[in-house]
Length: 579
Image (tube, rainbow, N blue to C red; front, side, top):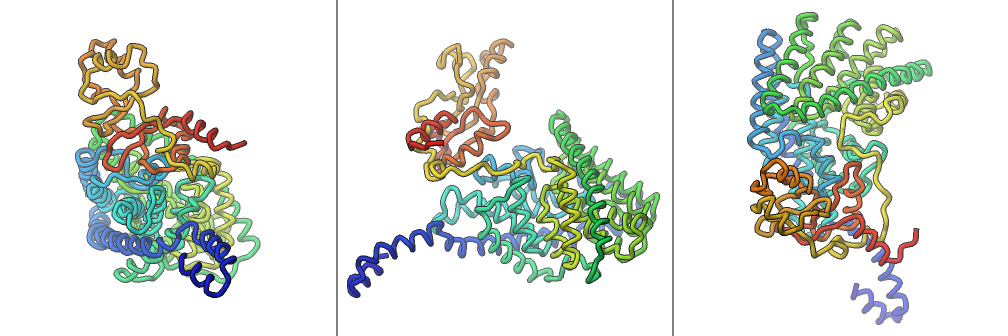
């Protein structure tokens, strides 16, 4: 800003220079121009990645598999099971946690890890997703696309510090990458943008990621379109008008699908938690899921021989349902078995997500509703309403559902009925959601916490356990009472995990006093990097399942301090904040 002051002195306007400088500082206070460089880079890289994944699954893997399964139905079960076993083995032996992947990992990283994603299992997780979906799992490409995009954005944060990227920007780059992945895979940039902003919350938006998500989504879409074309993913022959009667029936369809989605959401969450707690090896759970998924596809083909099958990415099923005659019973059976196959595929740990299965089931229910209850020739309209309603109720993403119907189907005239169906389904389904990592809404921003760093409030003197020390040695060092709720565990100064007094006492009481601390600790502690804000810390410490303390870690992994809610309150009191 020195040029402003020099020019003002020459022209005799020196008294206005301070005002001009203040206005410019306020105008560019958020440093948004950095995203004009960072976001396009994200968009290009993610667009190329998603184009490759789409090519592998939609061109090389699933089409020949689909033709073979339709011609030889008895091979469905062994083929799907084989793919699931491969995915299970990859996840069990090539990733640190086989139950963490896809959309849930990105949402969890956004809320709990300041946007950080472990990159070592990046390629194995994408390969497991290709094995899951390409072999016939009832899922689609949005899982690896959101994960691949989000992880790429998080990784780029470590490479682009020279462009003014801050610690808190990693969460923004994570969400922007997820938006770019979603925009590319559905060839729908606005859908990618809105879904990524809605994804972390049930009743809120990730507002801070708006601009970079918008830029990254558009660039990713353009990159993807260069290779696979820009036409809508599904071609609806939409009508230009609808009646008031259609709006009433759209609300009724939304209510019905809201109840179905609520039941599905709760069932999925219960079964998923049961399978996570199950002690069987991951690949065995996947094998069981593959058998059950294959049986869903085989059962449908045994009842209704044709081109429909409730397996795989199923993009071909939408034009099949809309452009060919199918009875209502067949469509209802398809929707039910599609949901059942999705439960079997993803509850056991299949690596993907269920955006496509939900809207596909919604479209089949919508067409059956139009044929059997409304007796309307506008089956496209009710298919679109069913799609929007199921996405809104399943993912708690009502805006995404309507935008997706408009972009991916080309059916812009369906927006009003879809809005009504989505709103009713969202309300009827209540707080039920397929995502366990979603939060209801963002906590209120406190300016003093957003401007203060964890470095300023953390405790620099603390008791830590050496990973190689035994339980008895640590008790001798820390004292028999073990007054803290948890203790950091370090190895060579670097964070290794945390250990609870309860775990140590159990080891002592069971005669395992010589057991090393590293076998008793939690290897995935809640941590934040130095430079993170106290607002970031508060988000984690106010989680429904909060940790007793946060570990503050340097960029090279060294433990620098610990932070608790009390430390945050002390920092607030020092800033003289009055509630």
